[in-house]
Image (cartoon, rainbow, N blue to C red; front, side, top):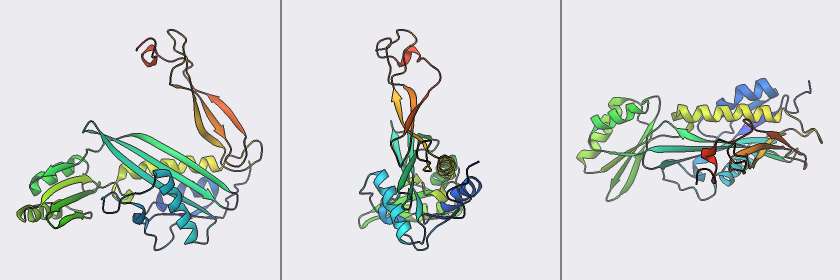
Length: 278
C-alpha cells in the first residue's frame, strides 16, 4: 500500500464554527494528517446565513477565498474550506448545496467535492407568539437544530442566533412582538447549529480524504477521482441518448490524465427520454 503523502502533515480548516472536528477522523484514519482551525478567523466576513453580511462571490470562489485565508493565517501548506447554500423551491422544499475545497500549495493542486440534495428543514415562517415560535422550531429538531429569529422594525433588522432553549426562544419572541416587531423564524444553517449540514460536511470530508489517498495512475499526484460526468445514457425504449449520466469522468488535479467509469444501470427508463416522454 502506498504511503500517504500527507502523513504527519497539518491541514488548516477555514472555520469559526468547529468544522475542523468534522474532518479530523477521516483525515487522521485515511491520510495520517491532523486538521486544525487557525485561531481568529472571521469566515462570516465572506457572507453569513443571517443575511447581515451578504455573500458577494460565487460559492466556489467563496470557499477558495476561505481556504486561502486559512493558509495565510497558519503554517500549513494545505487547507480545507466549505461553503453551503440553501434555497427554498415552491415554498416548501429546501435544496442544499455544499462545496468542500482542498488547496495544496506545495503540490499545486485544488480539489472540489460537492453535495447537492434536499434537506429536511422547512423554509422561513412568520410568527407572532413565543408559543408558535417554539412549536415551529420543534418541528425542525430544536434545540439540537438551531434557529434564527429575524425582527424587522422601523430602525432596522436584528437577528438572534443563539437562543438555545424553548424558554429563551419564547421569551425573546414574546418581548419583540410586544414591541411591535415583525418576526420571522428560520433554521440556523451554521455547521455547529445544524446536525444535518454537519453530517453532509463530514461525509464530504471522508470523500475528500479517500480521494487524496488515491494517486494518479499517470503522475502519482494525490487526489485522483471524479471530476465530471459524461451525459447521454441511452433510453431503453428508443435507444436515443438522454440527459442522464452515462459515465463518470475521473481525472487528476495535476496532469491531464482521465478515464471513464461507466454508470449503472446501462439504460435509462423512458420517462427520462425527451422523445418517449416529451
